[in-house]
Image 1: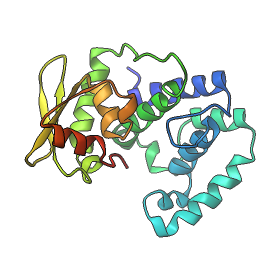
Image 2: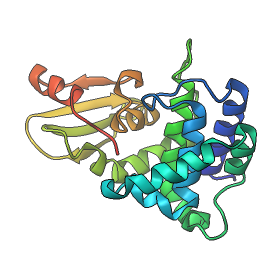
Image 3: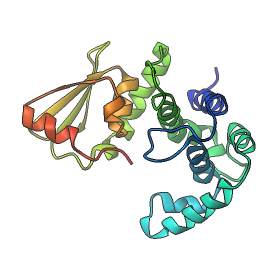
Image 4: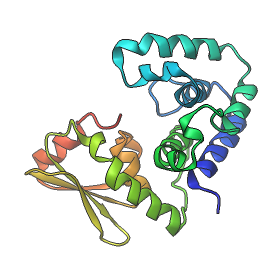
Length: 210
């Protein structure tokens, strides 16, 4: 069975070509082309270190500007082809661990920036994988929250605590929606927040995500 990291990559590329390079995304002022360039730099250039190390962000910006001048369709097909041979993301386990959520979220960044979007009907297997990964990877994404954060699956009732603390807020929804919320796409994630009004307001205003 094809890994979700690869199906999300391919579907993102299909949608990017369908919509065009200048269409918006949920990533601030990034266009679809800007997002494609970001993904190419992230997994194919040493300059990607600037994505997480602020003082080296200039290297990432330079590498991105160089790619921005290239043909959009060529860039998309390069992204579709997967990481270059020298990239650690080429390793199947690394790809699954670090690209499943990355490509799911960015696919939705493109989908949900368009008018009339609706959540996709993901399979139980896909929802299970997203739940498993956000239960581990989501802890660092809520580090700036000033309240406790508990995720609850609306379909099964399963819970995972991403940040201990009181008061706590329960974020309830399907795994796909919980992933988007924790990654900072709060206004576009269909979830319910359960907790004291002050705690809910604090979490709603927190800077979540990478």
